[in-house]
Amino acid sequence: AFLAALCGALCVAAATAAVTEIQGHPTFIEGTSAWKHVGAAPLDRLQPLLFAVRQNTEHLEKELMKVSDPRSPHYGQHWTMDDLSVFANPEGTALVHKFLANFDVKSVSTSTHGEYVKAWMTVETANKLLSTTFHEFVSKKDGKTSIVRCGRYELPAELAAEVSLIGYTTHFPVISTLSVFRALRMDADGQATPKVISSYYKIDNNTVATSQSSNAVFETINQSYEPSDLKAFDSEFGVPAQSIAKVVGNNNPSSCSENPNNCVEAELDVQVITAIAQDTHTTFWSIPGSESFLEWAQAVASDSNPPKVFSISYGSVESDIPSSQAQAF
Image 1 (tube, helix red, strand yellow):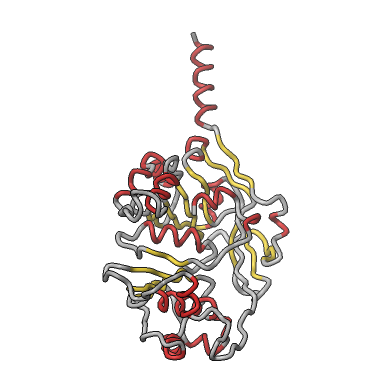
Image 2: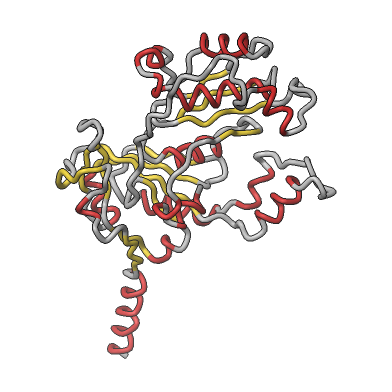
């Protein structure tokens, strides 16, 4: 009886101790073409961890196509943020919260339906929480910007089954862009002017049909826009004066005159979206940090009334993105 009880206790302990290891890049310690390894991260440095909870998305794509395909009888019958709760995984979110409660976490924030859980803690706590060692890397471009990443981490198997990935761990961001600014003739003959774009997509009326319409441009890597540039663009191409209704995050217009490449992507986004969909409530939504796609997804999921349309003109090399991160986004 004693042996049977001991065997049972050992089996329970083994089950409790079951962990799942998540591996990063095998040459993690060497850094990347953009990031140079510095050493073990300072233990007192604050580090975020962004848990993407697996959602019940088995039928998500089917439902998305129903409202997006013009041939569908459900076309245009878009879901509200509250409707999206059917895809939520509250049990998974609860497991993340329970796990974090065992450690010295500074703060925790959770998106509306529990899709994302973001926690702040020291590197020392993060090392313990994920059974790993975080290292510091510095940008080879400016020699100043630094990030903290790990080569691998562990989670209790039960929790790992409910989490698609943890941001700010094994994935290195790409923060540099090519200098693409060049002067164009002001008449832009042959270029993609608002008139040319509207003609190509057979848009007869650029004024939105309802005041309830809203859209936004996603911006990152410190891109900004200058309102006076938007005014000049509208005047040059015969567009009624447009404006940005709301700015979320950072926008530094003065940086545009310092270096046009600080604003070239954001200005293109702002000028085109406001010219094609005129008199819309347009938001300039800027996301900082080295996990901007995940941070944006969390921010939108946490907003009770986000813009109805987002324009995202940024991307990453697909082969550099783990499938788990793509699915989480």
